[in-house]
Image (cartoon, rainbow, N blue to C red):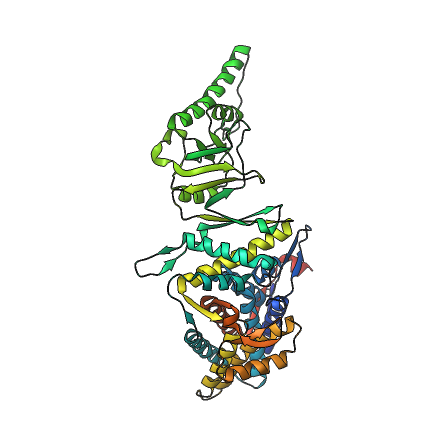
Length: 529
């Protein structure tokens, strides 16, 4: 201390922001990220066009994709993006909602700070409110034990509404639900579990969206490596090889001195014999399909073709592992290890006619399916893939948990009313923080109204009035501007998505509002500037 002032010794390349300035900086960063994705929420949300420095274009209204593509430097903004990515990884949807809630919580915190309420009091109030909100959410959940296909289709419809795939949502939702139910496993207690890796999504540029289909098996974006190989193999015995079927290059630089034509011929014959040995071992093993992680030499392709074996080369390692599980086969490192015990099995392996791909159907491990989507251009099919992924993930969440909530602002209104009633039972300044937490749930119906060109004040008043009168499923029909029973309208989402969004938003906001010093290390380039 010097004359009552603290002395902080830091490196020269560290910037320090303290007190209200640090809090304000975090609040503004979170509000900016929330504003960036806010207009994409709901059936009438708008899309964003993102252009990379290399000129690649992405057009989407998927919150996780938008946040992943943009570049930010502020630490609080980076934390919000991490929250959104975690939300997408955990439950597959609700990224935009979680960002909006964080932005609203930070804005409410700013108002409380202006009233001289300490950040720790606000953080404690937010934590209490979050716990109560999760209780209210659970109390309002709709339970459906077992398989309810009609309800699952409604969940999928809700997930794809407002996306590029919406024009065909009935067909796509049905395909997605069928895909998830095909791979779901049910235990003795009637509880479902789904491995998301068992549902593959493939997109093809060409044809129309109406050509979407569900394949019982998987596809690989490659075809046979030689035109003489068969296009279709039934009762496939699939050899999965990690070994390259070509002459290996030496790991160190070396030279071979050849002085006569006989030596040259002997060297060439030795290579040919080695390659023929590879092919002969595969033929002798009884395999009629080969998936090779590395390359296959022309000579090996020739011999395999004459033996009627379909071979595909340069299969990515990740795909090899997935295919080995689907085919119930084992990846081997040498052709000498091939026998019946390591083969994968499929009823049919066939090269597709309209696209450059090969499909495997009737796999021994039947718990794998592929959703095939088609579109007119790459940007469109990329967005189709994101929409189908979201739909598949929420259907998985709903099937596993068996708990649903009504969307379109209905559950948000219930949370708002419930938290305000709870706040009245809590004494002290913590009550103000809980009230502030209740206010954030007005942001979702407000945003839905704004994005639909409706008056948010009128909509919110009508929505609150309906819920005060006991209409707990009342929500906003963004197409008519009326408050209607959204359960009857089929606007339903998994409880897990809403739960995760509320929990991650509350925890992130409680963490950020307790920050009173930011120490940011600058790079050498920043110092030079």
